[in-house]
Amino acid sequence: MSSRSVPLSWLCDMDGVLVHGGVAVPGAARFVESLASAGRDLLVLTNNSLYTPRDLAARLAAAGLEIPVESLWTSALATARFLHTQRPGGTAFVIGEAGLTTALHDAGYVLTDKDPDYVVLGETHSYSFSAITKAIRLVSAGARFIATNPDPIGPSAEGILPATGAVAALITHATGVEPYFVGKPNPLMMREGLNVLGAHSESAVMVGDRMDTDVVSGIEAGLETVLVLSGVTAAGDVERFPYRPTRVVGSVADLVAELDELAAR
Image 1: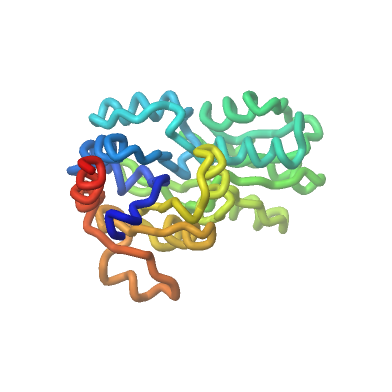
Image 2: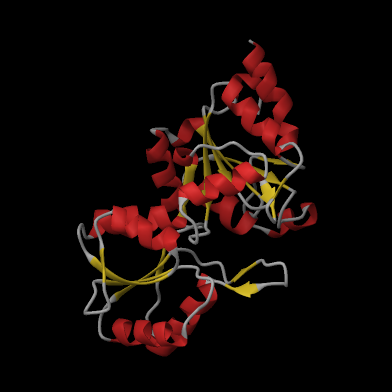
């Protein structure tokens, strides 16, 4: 993109783009600072539903990235907003952590295992067999099935871990009911993010490290897309997909110069 067309609003994935395992990607702090100096809005998106925005802001600050709470958009927040628009003041049986339960409480939802409107599945530090069994029975009895994101695995210091998509598949196999996934690659998460910013897709860009979630959801939401090669998707993988990002760069550090040029004008 040329300096004359640098988007007004930037939606940016977190893991693999700004941080790696709790450590900032080189140049990420300057990228965040340059966006602010250029007067560009930033919203950081993550499919991770474990943490509240306040928790995430503290974790990012520990990595040297100062991002305000209101600039963080999680799949848990997107799920809570979606359910509020669908069935305000509803009830849900939830498998998840504080990021998800807090978002649903704040949206006016009552959490219960007694004939809930929804079964809502998100990440948790320990998937309980009894909780999964309860979810299967409730979905079989007619509860609507929602999941925060389709990611089948997640990272840890010891290796990969089963994530929401894998557990959702277990519940689906037992019940025959597919969940509605709110997080990326559902473009709904992008559109809700734009609403949070008060932005329009024509003047916004999505920056991500995955072709199959970040880039495709950005394209489907009508945004420009920037793929960074600092995370999951490698340069040689791009041509395997039937769609292309607007631009491919090594990392967000490669975007700093044009943002600084814009700020200097």
